[in-house]
Image 1 (cartoon, rainbow, N blue to C red):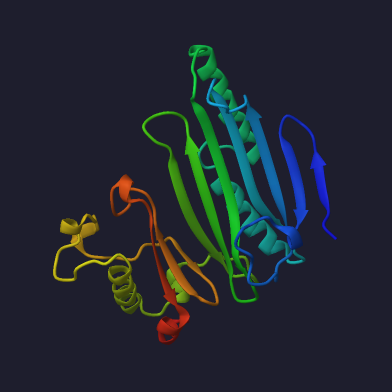
Image 2 (image 1 turned 30 degrees about the horizontal axis):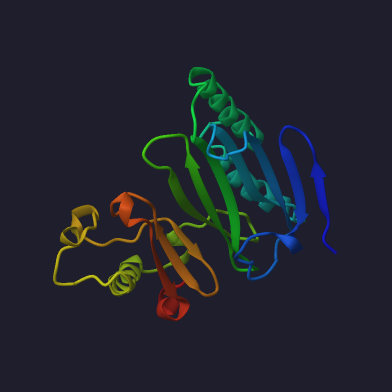
Length: 252
């Protein structure tokens, strides 16, 4: 049975059991116990006639019997969600965002069709005995030519709560880079005989390289490149997925 608790304040908070998380991507399993917390707030109707603002945060709160894991992962999640406004709580970031919008309305009371947005959603990619892999999907807009979108991966040891770096998982990063390059060139139909820069990409020294924004699951490892990271805004974001079969020999 699904249980939902709604608390009505200026900010609405909903707690859902981990059996009914609303993420589009379902966890591979549910090794660690958690609840999903949703914080939302809105000013205006966002109908295109007058300026408005809307905020939405959705993230897991781990409540496993292993308190060390809970503290480590929950603190990391809170820190990332509060990074933009340098607050100690998610609620504090929401309040700062709304406060800035109210100041904007005072200065420009006749503003129309200006929709401020701040959305952050954590998706659990895997929650197993071997990996806890999370994806933070963010988008926002506070005026200007265009807004922003971002995806940030994070990985933890589910038994200790330790943050996992690529060196904790892979024994040979040079070989991993070779495999990733081959997949990247094939996926985006690049010519190996031409430079990356001549094909619209901007890697350091014009050499393909994996980054540190990765997720690890039982299916394989994924790398994500954000807007402006290796190409223009118009080209969007890029992903490289390497199936586990291709990296078995270099997995720790």
